[in-house]
Image (cartoon, rainbow, N blue to C red; front, side):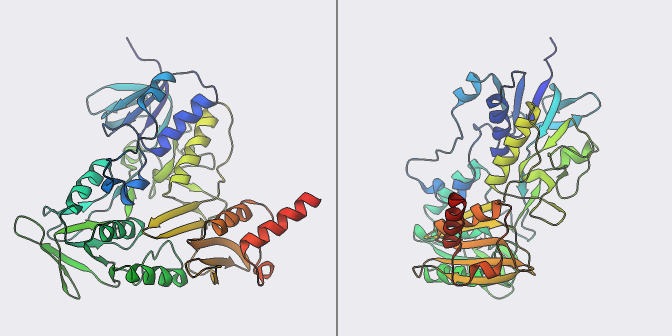
Length: 413
């Protein structure tokens, strides 16, 4: 018997889960199938780099129990990797040879880690972090590691550095760029963040290249262009690339992600959508197309596409926001900044709280905060509104105070 065509989602992460949740929540009653590479139930990825893999109670990161899918008549196929898309016949083909027809296809394939391009990167004791299985392996290794080298000073690297330091390891972060988080955080805030990591005992080497990883049977040393570092565990996170090869091989428009329109439909085939880390899309907070890697983006895009397929179309305009828990430091970002924006650093009401406001032509476009959740939430409220915030509005004031003042005016009027 031939399966009925319906909505097929390729990818079992946050974005794919949000699609099917929104579909059923909006009343869509047609067939829905999720094809997931991994054999685990769809799970949260952010905890993997923060603390879950050292939790003595084990890793509990499933988004929902298996019953969620069963009760909503969602067919969840775990460990069923898609090998190709047959767009002419509107079907996906799995590695087992199964053909799954679709009326609408959603690509939620996520991203993959960039490989560490040095000799010895495959020596035992060298790990990347992307999956739940990766997190389990790193957690076991941290139990005995004395010297940990983290290659990459981005979100994942800094989060893992703090996890390793918390279990008593000597930790060194090696970053090729001249500063930490060079793509995500302003130079002004980065320096404060670096100081906090160093005060916590993490050694940081920026502007430093890894030349090789060495060891007899297991990692022992990391050779950099500055010095040789002792290591019995190496974890690297040097960026991610979108998993867009299925789309490319099927003839869809691809350029660092599947190119989609403002409703997240492929510009090549309107029967196909892309969401999350694999989608490159227009956004009112960006100049040109952008690809965003965040839980907020994956969740909001999945929800939008699920509702659109169910009959409620809308453009994607959610404000981008991000967070990173790095030991005792909570970094939160709202909006999208560029290297040419003007940055104003504002202290909070305690030494641990700090904010950096980014202005473009005098208008607030992004806010970064350290250990200041209230200011982050105020930034999101203000940036989501149509009324702009200008630097002149903030003379001697925080965003929290400005948000309260504007809300008071709205209530009176």
